[in-house]
Every structure is written in C-alpha cells, then in structure tokens.
Image (cartoon, rainbow over all chains, first blue to last red; front, side, top):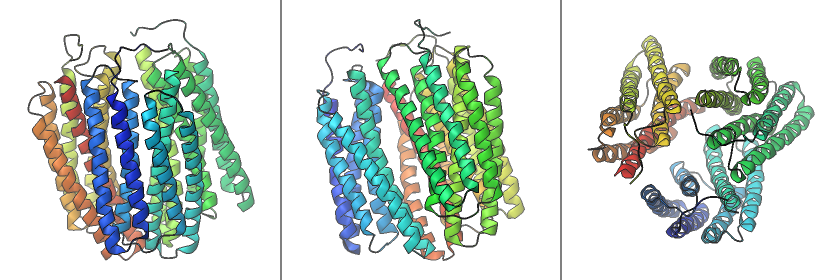
Length: 206
Length: 206
Length: 206
C-alpha cells in the first residue's frame, strides 16, 4: 500500500504508449534495412534516425512533464526509468542501423535477421502493454513473454558470436560484425529492462 | 541524523549476506576453470551459470521485498544499489567464464589467474562484511581493503593489456583475450562499487 | 513549485565549480599530450592522472557533504548526479590519455585534435556555468551551446570512425585507435549529460 494524491495524471500512459510505438516503427525499419541494398540502407537508416528523434522528443516531453508535476500516476522515478529504458531500446536499434551503413558491411548472417525479428516482437508487446499500465491489469503476460524473448535473443546472440569467430577470418570484418551484433543484443537487454520495470511497478501497486 | 521508524527489517542483512556468498562460490569456480581442460571448463562454466542464477534469485528476492515493505533498515535506494552492484560482480564473473568457453581460448596468461585471485579475495571480504551492516561496526577495514584490492587489480589489468598487445600477434586472438581481461576488470570495479556504497551507507548512519 | 527549507547550503556551488575547473585543466593537458613526443606524453598523462585524482577528491567531498546534510540547495539526487557526471567527463579524458601512452600509438589523425578541442570548449563552458547555478540565471545559453558542441563531436566521431576503417589496414592499430576515439566520444557524451542535468534542475526550480 502506498500513499497517493488524486487525481492521477493519466497523460503519462499516452506518452509512454506513443514512445513505445516509435520502437515498433524502428524495429520494422531495421528489419527492412537488413535486406536492402546500399542505397536502400542509407535511406532507411535516415528514416530510423527520424524515428529515433521522434522517440527522443517523446522522452523529453515525459521528462519535462515529470519535472513540472507534483502528482504522478506512479512513482516519479519509475516513470523516469521506464522512459529512459524505452529510449535506450531505440538508441541501440538506431545505432545498429548506423553501424551497418557506416561500416559498409555486406550481407549479414541470417541469425541477425532473427535477432531483429525478436526485437520487433518485443517492441510490439511493449507498445501493447503500455496502455495497460493505466489499469495495471493483464501485464504479467507481457513481462513473462518479453523475458522469454530476451532468453531467445541471448541464445541467438551466443550462437552468432560463435559463428562469427568460426567463419569470419578477416579481423576487421569480424570487428565490424561483432559490434553490430552486440548492439542488437543491447537492444534486447533494454527491452527486458523495460519489462522488469513494469513488473516492479505492478508489484508496488498491487 | 535521519528519521527512522522501528522495527528495522533485519532480513535484508541475511539476504545481502547470502547474495555475497554466491560471489565467493563464483570466484572459486572461475579460478578452477582457468586451470581446467576444455571439458572441465565447460562443466565449470555451467556451474558458474547456476551460481549466477542463484545470485539472480537472491537479488530478485531483495527487490521484491523492497517493493512491498514500507520500513527498511536503511535507505531503500541504498539497499537496491547494493543488491544491484553485488549482482553485477556475479554477472561479470559469469560472463568471463562464458567467453573463455565460447572463444575456445587456450592457456591464459598467469596474470589472469592473479586477477581472479584478487576477485576471490574481494568476494570473501564482501561476504564477511555484509552481516556487519546490521551493527554498522568494523566496516572501514573492509572498504579500505577492497579499495586497495581494486587498485591492485587495476595495475594488473594495465600490465595485462600491455602484455597482450606486446605478445599476441594474431588480432582475433588479441580481441578475445582483451575482452576477457576487460570483463574481469569490470568485476573488480563492481566490487569496489559495492565497497563504496557500504562506505556511503555507514557515513549516513553515523 | 517545490518545498524548500532555508538557508540553502551554498558551498555546493563552489564545490561543483571547483570540480568543473579540473575538467578545463584535464582537457588542456590532453590537447597538449596529443602533440607531444613519447616522453612528453608520459609526463602529461601523469599530470592528467593528478588532475583526475583532484577531481575525484572534489567529487567525494560533495558526496560526503550530501550524506551528512539535511538541507541542500536543490534536489539531493540532482547534486549527486551532477557531480557524478562531471567526474565521468574527467575519467574519460584521463582514460584516453592513458590509452594513448599504454598503446604506444604514433601520430593521431587531425580529427582527434578537433575532438579534444570540442571537449576543451565544453569544459570551459561548464566551468563558467556552475557558479550560475546559485542564481539559476543565464544557464540556457550554456546548455544550448554544449548540446551544439556534442552534435559537432558526434559528427566528428562518425567521420573519424569511417576514416579509420578506410585508412588503417593493420587490425591491431585500428583496434587501438578506435578505442581511443570512442573514449573521447564518451567524454563528449558526459559533458552533454551534465548540460542536460543542469537544464532539468533549472526547469524544476523555475
């Protein structure tokens, strides 16, 4: 049981949901980018940068509101943490796209597409879950599933790293691919961090 | 002087001590793994993963309790920070073991064993110190000694990096060894972070 | 509007200003180090280490005072965050100097000097802004300009990475240079983080 002043400021739920929606866009663009040619990749990386800026703006709106409001629907630090973690998901996805273009890498291993598909699914689940913070209902399915996805991403990641060290003999190429794969793993970690925060918030409120 | 409601919930001390005890186990397994052959390493890495899961469960118990308790023996954020930092020590040790197996590295330089010995000593000191949080007595020796160990680890780390760049001519091998050595340095940093938090807590309470 | 007890403890402003002043020293030493020969670099790296220790001591003074004071001029967590972020700026600059010496790198690309010049300018602006936290006036110019500098640093960083991958064919050399360049980018990020915190604090107080 926690003390709370009414009325709750419900706009946070909308802002968090909007922020999470940018992640779905980001993950879609990233998936598309993997299969594109050089020009396509450059164009899509720019679109991803736009999506990242939009997410950034959404995060800042949340922060600004947090700093100017006395009453928040749940713990101020939790809203702050949630917005930051969502923003981190986006940053990693955008960074991966950026590196793929900057490093001029060719065809990426199939498992990279699988990694991105996992991110896309995590983004969808996250975007669907955010509005449910309002009622705090039906959230357990979400965090259980995202944790499962993160485990899957982690196994994929380990296999990918082993594969890269087995197959890529050019050290500079290896360096590039390893970094891209690790940044995608960071994105998966951030999605898990979001889910864990939602779990914590739900626990506190129960 | 800080306001406090009684009674203090003393179970946190037991939970933190149990968590720290897993770190001692982890450091022992890691030391053993360094000297083992391929099969031995794989077996020990799995055991370390079990220890890491146990530490994870201990951390989550602490977090869950924190979120459901109103009165904590000291600042809620400090308990949270302490548990997270202890968990980080374990994560880095487990990651090092995992990389050694995943990268199929051979004999590691002697200084890596020295690094792990320092971690083992830090883990022992940490596990011994946690129960003393209850009385807040005799903690200074602990944090002074862990800071000394971290300085030692830092010097070792620098020498190791210089040695690797001097001796290892295969860039891919260098990449692997460097990453392992850096992850071990992360573990040492996390132990220092735990000690610094204990110092902060003791200061606040004095 | 936030509740506040008087009198404010104004020493924090002096301590933060002193801490930021060490960053100006650090950035100057780093700029000098880039152009120096082997012996000069070693000497300057030691001086930078001294500056880093001085910044560390300043940070600890702030933390100690925070833990023992009930009334702070603004949110305790914000002072803590500000001191930590300032300390991070220094750590990254010192780490860059350390790596340049440890890796025995030769002449660095011109753009590295440009990176360091941006850091130096950010350090100066930061040191000038800290005393203005007292009145909370004329701070917007500071954070707008540091954000602009960080954008510039970011573009420089991307160009540098592309240049390194285009021009450096020895993978071990590439590994060294890339790490140095990334640590400098970390420093720029930390300066931006300081500016964003100042913006947040000013917003809360307005």
